[in-house]
Length: 222
Image (cartoon, rainbow, N blue to C red; front, side):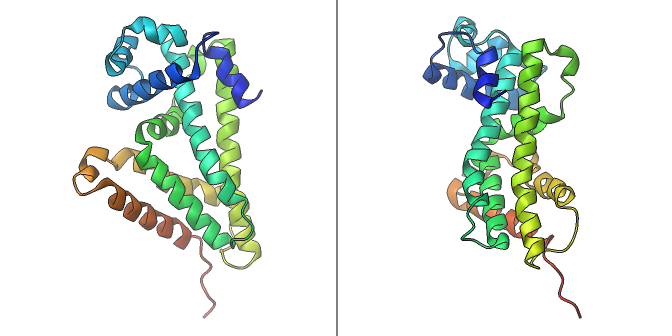
């Protein structure tokens, strides 16, 4: 099943993309503020400044909205990071640095969507999924695996060139992305904005990128 197919399964027929995006933006913010369980359709409508009928025009249930927010978050990451991962004009170290910087930046500039995407993967939703939602969930997991493989492939390339230490690439990718994803837990957009969001975001992203790349560098023989 393609990503587009997964989306179509739980979006109501005839729902236009512009209005749907506004619902997703409101839902991502509501889920971030309250958590999935405590968020209601009314909460999403309140953030949207609309009636819940507008929300139901696009989606059948709160869970359908949650899954769509997750897909949107994963898609943003893949669309931004994928081209860098495949840019063979750059060496593995620089590719990984840029990929990590982009990933970290999205964790902050698209905080609500990325927090839902990161934390949603860890939720135990299996018992509450209907068959069509199960297919969507399976596609979300596949999207995550493909995204992780982008990083694993660059790590392997760096090992082949002697830039990175030898370790199973998929295993190395887990703590690398874990460190970057943790940004969604401690980062507070309202606090950073007080000192100027742009420069602060860039400094944080640069530090995180250097941190994860440094953890993989090969230590010279002494």
